[in-house]
Length: 430
Image (cartoon, rainbow, N blue to C red; front, side):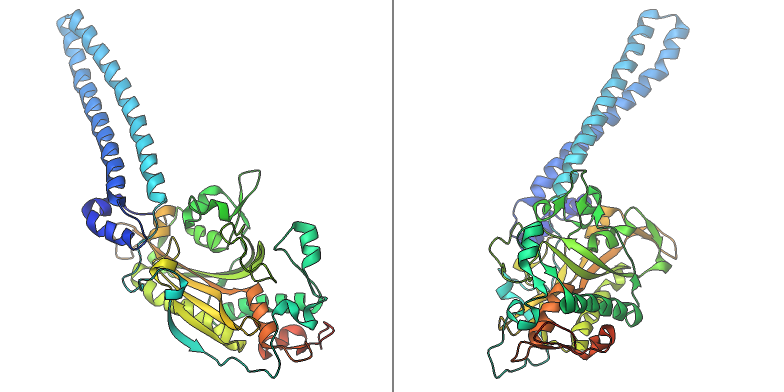
C-alpha cells in the first residue's frame, strides 16, 4: 500500500510511476478522497472546539443567573457533540474509502526494471548449463513410460476435477525427495529457518501480502471465510503482521514447504496437459524480512539460493529480469528462473524472486525499532520460490529421460532415495 503523504508531496512523480503500470489519473483520484477526508476531520475538530468553548461558558452563565443563556449554551454543547460524533464517523468512512482505493494500486517499480509489454520483453541476465541432446525425440513428462503408472490424471479428475493429479510409487517418492532436498539445502547451507505454517488464513492476511482485493478470483475461499493460501509467502510474511521488531533481529530468513492452492482463473486453456499448471501443488518458499538498507543485497542472496537448487540438480536454466508489463502487482522488482524442459523444447518458469520494498509492510503495519533510537520504520519484505516442487519434478523427469522411457535421477537425490538412481521404464526405482 502507498503512503498518501508521499502522493500528496509528489503527485506528478507518483503518476509517472503508475503510468509504467498502465494506469492514469491515479494521484488525482487518491487526493480527491484524501481532501474529502481531511475536510471531515477539520470540520469535526472545529465542532469539538466550539463545544469546548461553549462548555466553558456554561458555568459562567449559571453563576450570573442568566437561565436563558445557560440553556442556550447547554443545548449548543449537546448539538456540537452530536455534530462532532457524526463528522468523526463520516471521516472514518472516508478514511476507509481511501484505504480501499490505495489497496487497489500496485507497487511502484524499481528504476532498473526494463520497460516492456509482456514476458517476451523480459531481459535474460544469466544462463547456466547446456541442454542435453538426444538421439531420440524427447517426450514431455506425462508421456514417459516410467511415469505412466505413477502419474494418474484420470483418478485425479475423478476425485477432484481437472488439473489435479495422483502421484504414486517412484514418482511420488521422487517428488517428496525433491521437497526434502530443497528444505535441507536452504536450512543447512543457506541459513534459513524452517517454518511450518497453516494453509488456511484469515482474509486480512491475504490483504497484507497483496493477494486481495485484486486477485480474489485466483484463490479459493472456504464457506467459513478462510482462504487457502496460493503460496506460503502469505503466511511467512504475515508472521510479522502488526509487529515492531528490534533492528538487531533483522534479517529474518524463513523457508516453508507447503501445499498451495490456485484457481488459475486467468489461465483458461493454458498448459492443460500434464502437471505443469495445477490447482493444488507444493512449493518450498523463501521469505526474508530485512532492514531497508539491505533489501537490494538480500534479493541477490535469495536469487543465489534458488539458483543453487537447480545447479545441484544439474538442471539447465536461465534467469530473467521481468519487464514492466510482466511485473507482479506488489513487487518492486522480480527475477524469474526458467528451467529447460526438453519435452517442450523451451525454458519454463520455476521460481520468482521478488522484493516488495515497504509495500507489504505498510499493508501489514510491520516495522522495526532502530537500535540507535528514533521512530519505528517499515521493514522490507522479499519472497522467492525455492523451488516449485512439481515443476522441478517435471524438469528432473524430462531432463533425465532415456530412449526406453526410463529416467536417470540427479546425484543430489540419491541419498534421499535409499541410493536408488533410476526410475525404470516399468515405473520402479532401481
